[in-house]
Length: 208
Image 1 (tube, helix red, strand yellow):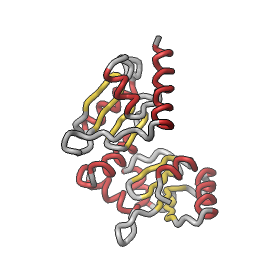
Image 2: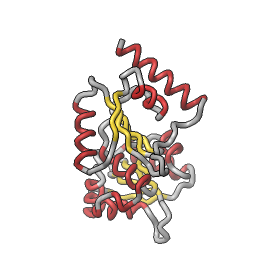
Image 3: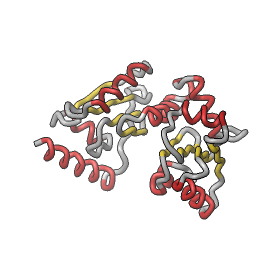
């Protein structure tokens, strides 16, 4: 039954995204962004760690069971769930899986820089130029194959970017760690974050 429910969720989400538009934003009655956490009884450590992380950061959130075959399932599909757990819907941002670095970005985008820690904000300032316009930043290493692919993609498409080698630049490595980077490339445009070289995601998430 769980497998059938999962397939139904995925089918519903695909229909919603491609035929009914992108997932709706999550806002309260005053138009302010809300945070909604979707979990299941079988999600295990990923859901538990994400729940704990939201609590530690004192983020107000409501939690729903995505597989309750009732209101939780309906909301999960409405907010664009595709069967992966946990899912955080925060305004128009979506965080799939236990990904604190993505939560930091979502907080900055939806709630503003006042809602992230000062060291996180300092690290994110790298992603803006002198006029506070967002720019593309890549945390990389010299030997990373996917970093090479990202460089080539940016060059081929005339996309300006700033690169920081985390093995040679101590300040960049500190900021990389602050933003909970775990591999390279780690890409940003302003507060928007893309982990790894994923051309489709870059073109979807970045304003290029």
